[in-house]
Every structure is written in structure tokens, then in C-alpha cells.
Length: 266
Image (tube, rainbow, N blue to C red; front, side):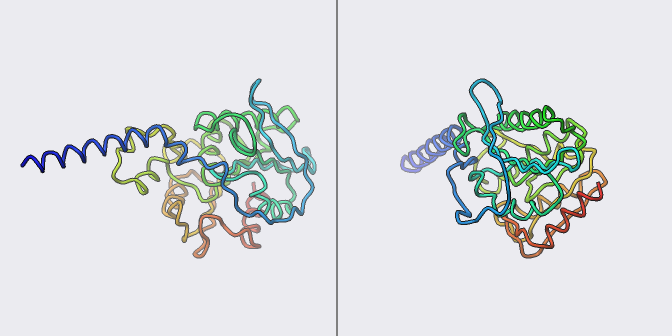
């Protein structure tokens, strides 16, 4: 009996220690600025590197592909939870073919930027990028928000507050809570989670056209999450669901055509 009691006590203490560790370490599990993919992509577009001021300490390293702010809409890309600007070259090589301007920002803590990423900090960074565009003469109704993975949560938050031209979500999740429950079913996620990105509760607040893109073979964010967001989104809306894409969707002619048609329609 004493052995059982000691064993149970040890397990309970170990579980509590694990919860405390995860609580304080969770943002290291969510944000991966040092992760590096697509290292050998060659740049096939012209761009300028700029630094968008957020406050006196934070400036966001960003790439701007400016064709004509007055003639074309501007796509603002909020990237995912890993890597840096150059990891998105493969996307820009294709998006550059469209008649749009493109602003790709990097979050604080990413691409050599100062600061630490958190949910509220990323919202602030995104709004700073929109403000920069506004000061350059680009109105919100000429801005298309593009959220990639984690960036989809930022796009939904920012998009619900203003009447932008439209929103594109690539491999989006319903919420970090729902995602974390898949990876950590043994933890009281709801109680300890700091950053929630609760897109599923906000999607109905968006009243502009929305395009949701997701691959059925996504093993990072379940395809069902992208499908659920699409089903709950207001019209007008369009989906681009593929049977073979994983989390990093292939930027082929089919995907590009869907983006092109969506942008031209709205």
C-alpha cells in the first residue's frame, strides 16, 4: 500500500512539474524563428528591403515588391511560426507573376528583429505594417491580407476590425487551443495556454471575401480545421482544397490561378 501511495505521489508531482515546465516554455514550442527551410531558392523578383517601425525599439525587417500602389492591390503576407523571409522566396517567385504589390513582413524575434513573439505582439506588428501601407497611400480597401499557418490567426484578428479588400488563409487552424489538444491531450491546455489565436470564434466577424486554401495531407494542422473555418465563414467565400498538398502547399499553376481569379473577382 505504501509503495502504491509513493508511486502515485511521484506521478502526481511529475505531472505538476511537467505542467509548470510547459507553461513557462510553451512559446518556445510555438515559435521557431531559427528553423530554416527552402535554403536554395533563387530570387526571381525585384524587391526592396525595408524596416517598418513598430515603436522606438522594434523595427520589422520586410520585403516590398512595389509595382504600382495606385494601379494594383497590395497583398500583405503574414508568415507562419517558423523561419525567416528567405524561406518564402518560393512563394514570392510565383506571386510576383500576378498584377499585385506584395509586402512580406517578418515578426519581432524573426529574421534578426529585436523583441519576442507573442499573440498580442504579432497583432501589433501586423497593424504596424498596415499603418505603413496607409502612410504610403494604400487604403485598406486595396489591401489583401494573406495569412500562412500561424499567420492566418493574425490575418483573422486584423481582418475582423477593418474593411480590407479580402483575406486569403493558407493552411489555417481553428485555434491554438484546438491544435494543442491534438499534440498534448494529457495537458490542461485551456488552463495554461498563453497565446490562443482563436480564429474559429472570430471568423464570423469578417465581412469581406475570403479564400481558404488547405491540403488534405497536412500533418501539422489538420485539414478538417481549414474546412471548418471555411464552412463557418461568411459569404462571399471560396475554397481551394487539394488531396495531395501537405502543410507547405505547392505553389503550382493551379494554386496560383485560384489566387489570381479570387483577386481579380474582388
